[in-house]
Image (cartoon, rainbow, N blue to C red):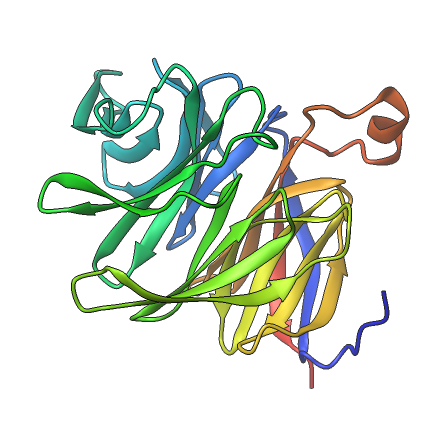
Length: 283
């Protein structure tokens, strides 16, 4: 794929965190601290860049919404929950059991657009045959936003009323325009990835959208119009998410080792680890 390297961004590896996740995801960063999950092993990780703490959850977590002093707000199979790092107790704040069969679907990703909170679900066994669900939390209840995406992912706010949500199965990234109440009033195809490459989690950095590209060993750099203008190659085949910490000017990247062969692991031995890059504007 021919790309014009015109983003003006550059990254340099700072360090790696050996979290050894099967499916690292749900990345959250703030002021030098980071948190992420391993969906497969039901674990939550907390790091200050040096020390790494690990916590076990009852349900499969997929997204971290916030990290407070001793509490973590999670999106997981059962819905929205709060986890205490002191007591190791997990309390469900808002269940989704009446929205779909939680035995058939697991949570996958989520995020915010303005004050509107989102959580998505995908079929556990055959997402290629079953579309998933995207919900918005409204007045302490879940409202269905979309049921046409197979593996809903990304959830990148690019404006207070516009959010990018991808379908990792089809390689499509959609831009949703929301009303003041958070209801979608428009859905337009924003980007289409090449076959074999899946858009995963990402973030907004200045005027650029960065998206982890599963099976491409890269972070794709897009402009706001959805054109890919740069691509950062990584030492992991399946990056799953990236988030920028403006306090430290660092880009955190989670990854997966799930489904990789011995040959692929030998080529990408850091798959499953979390990478920290210094990000800067090229002069």
